[in-house]
Image (cartoon, rainbow over the protein chains, first blue to last red):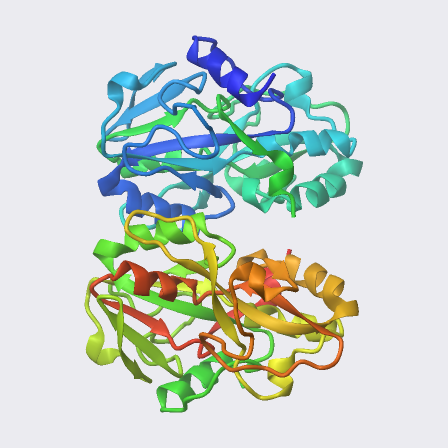
Length: 254
Length: 254
């Protein structure tokens, strides 16, 4: 399936997490805020490049861009979350009714992009094996703030066989535009995570014997900043339900 | 000499290009514009990461930041250019009299950062050998525009022995935060450059027999965009006269 075909299916109403979809096509996080808040959000992304690697920023009011020819950010993701004053007010597959001419959309790199490379290197990707969404957690680590925007680092977690942790690090370090190397390996308490079975977003994933938890910075981080910073409106993907772009994973490999 | 000592000497009035200064310390391009124009400039940088890799953005009105503790962007570069409505109106070692509380400063990666690595790999750096500034050229290649900001790609050029071009590419590709791999090697006419002996910025450099011209995206690109886009005020480093930061070159290596 091509990215355009996948976007058309989501536009048609299909709701599903996108891990494992469209092998080789870059997936992106979405965060959309009014122009008045966009400077602080772009600066926040610039100052926190591990969780917020910006792939593209659309012009104010624009619903498409070069990474998604003929696409529409209002309809082409499988599921969205809408926040008003930092409170989630809707989870919906179509945000057309919320759209305004002053909205600026940020497309932020997603770690799903390097999962094919992990698989090719022999590193199993458990949530894809188990057919569930990747688990994500708000941590106790703070991002560097920018103006009114501040919040915690959010991470995604993958169970990795201990003898393949070094491989997982080496593979993902070559993808700095989509979160790059892990931020932490091992004890989740170092990140302030109390219980790996209760992720803040996504689904819990079962480890296999000998697996170690490995944590990558996550593009849901801007949503945690929305909750804390309370812009008047923000639109984002539902965690794990990404924009599938026409960019190629290989374009992001160093 | 430490970066802080170098900044103090420039603050004291020394005017000199900074190539070869403070081995291992990251040098940065400066572009400062009013807050009203800053969104377009940050977006321009985001959309043109090869010429405009952003190392940091200071808050509006701020004259220092984490990359230059106790530094002052108004005085700590050896030489500045001041533009009003896109016209250069001053070249001065101190821009304090031009400062305004709404000015936003961008620190942009500089290719001087990887010159030590080139030298360590056995690639001669001719402009340092010859004690002159690196030559820079406006090209016929267009940057991707952002709002009111548009302009040509500016490149720096280094003569490289033909049998070391591959080494120069491999070494610099590992520094994407400071322009990364070359954008072009060989015929300057492909870039719309008529005469390598007449650079638009910096000094001409003599090749040695067997040298090939190699071109890297350059952090003077925002200044060319200032000339074309005519913001009411812009302050920048004089080409080759960089901010020497406390960041380490090795921090930018992948």
